[in-house]
Image (cartoon, rainbow, N blue to C red; front, side, top):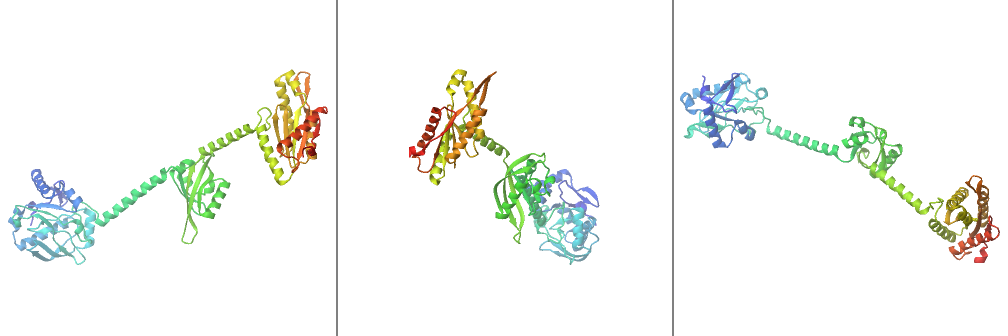
Length: 512
């Protein structure tokens, strides 16, 4: 029996596969009329929208034509069921034979036990063809949903929208929600659609991938270098920022030992700190780039432990502080220069008077507190004023630079040599007795007399000499620092009176 002309199945494009042929089941006008009714009843515009949004299959049949042929004749109803099963055969499940048949007039549904129809074959059908076609009408035939189990039973059921048996002009219906079908055989009607569980799983996978992508993006584009290493120093991962900082590709970094990118000193300090506290904060170090240049970094790191209390992984971040380090070094150098300028006489390059007094006061306090001797030598150039007035300031400045060089060259390490003012110089000699200070002064005087020659023009040479006054402080032999200096200055005046170019010492008893 063939009644396909009386049965219409709604698809999105108005056609359906039957015997491997594409059959148009109704004309455009009827199709639009039908969908208008579906829109009015369901608020949906396409079969695909019905199915994808709510998991329903939608269909339509002309109940009048079917009723004329079948009415309530059970034999013909059996033929109807066999026809429905034949359609299934067309879709590839295999030959099915009706074993038992029953019709429920209260629910307007059919049921049957079938041979040759099982879960595995039904699933193969779904995977192969993607959707399943079956005739549907509550009033006349019911809806073959594909419910099946290993006991090979089939139940026919669906939800009706309107039914001729209840006085409606036509039979409109929608299939039972896909999500309500038995889990062992959920046949697809229009296209292969994943189960609810599969959809949930796919959603979870998608969310995980999106989350992974988001955090990978944050990881790679963070403004700091991120890398992790194992307990042997092998790099397990490195972000894009770190690769750019080092000038390598990720594959050239991952799997290498961290020692390949750090100086020996930095690596030793890194491991010492990690092993001691399992945590690093602001450890400054140097990384070696691929182009052989260095970058200065500030490293933070934290170690994670395994179940046995051993280091499993060390997660590290590194900030490029190269520019900061360069600026700090420049600032430090500028401060050093300023400090040198502040304590250096610009003409002679010896310490200036202000620095001399600061250091002399400090050494005087130490000598007074701890009882060690402190000596001071005052030096004054002989006849400097006459030379300066006669030959000019340039020659005078030359004399000052010459004697300053000789003084600086011949004092001892730890002594403080400074220009006191004009043509006067002072040497502070900590931990030095009077005899030692006298010997030092005599040594400098002799060298100045021997090497202090200044050629001002051809065949015109000035011989430089100087006079020296020495005093030595022992605890309580001078009342104050000023008295101590005055004693040395008095000894210098005595040297001048006694003919210049000589060393004289003060009598401490005269000031006690």
